[in-house]
Length: 296
Image (tube, rainbow, N blue to C red; front, side):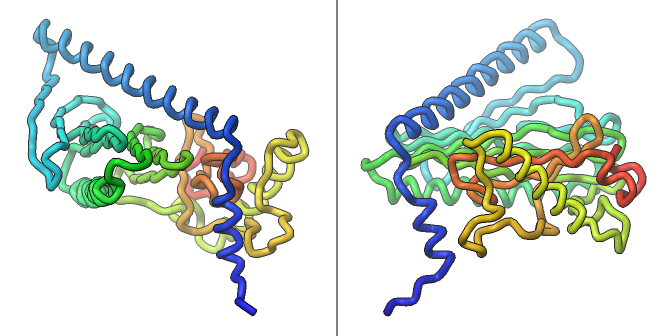
């Protein structure tokens, strides 16, 4: 008898075809979001033109075309002065990678952090990440040919900008047979310019993993009890699927209230229809174990 692995079962479960009506709603929602982002980019472009026209301050705008492996790709280089780290540094949109081959398309925003030498490592990390996304898209688009549908959208935004932390979030949406969303966040200590991990927020030997895990599990149970359409892999019959412990490498940011927010990619702790899942940890849960200055 062929041996069946739990990971294979989970993969098969996630690949169950989405009902046509639900898939239409998912595609429509994603497309609406993409159109909204495109409209926002158009507005920002017009604002820049006005600023340049009236000769305002030091705003600089540069557009250039550079070649990549795929000559059909258009890369716009734009320097946007958006203060995010006060006197320390700023984030700019270094380039926009846009490609449209009919049945395949991509929009990838590539930011760059400006400041002292301490941010060079972060920029190298961001470049490596976005270069990998671009290379994978070009490989997948070439293999896709003229069949099927493949859309990739990668945007960024600042999600934390307080006295201690700056966090840059990347949201990636990939549309093939269905939509898939994932999140990457770089959290930076403003004083050092270094990327920090979840453990850097908490006192040594604080057992922060257990504290956060228990709170997230309780939030999952509360949400499922309040709404029948909400489901997490928490008490599932397939034990291997269940969320048992938060990873030290978990994706996170700190919101404007100083609260820790844990982010799970689509499919990590729940069925794909649940999308990206976020859990805000109350300050009352973290205040006794957090290092001073990081959390409210």
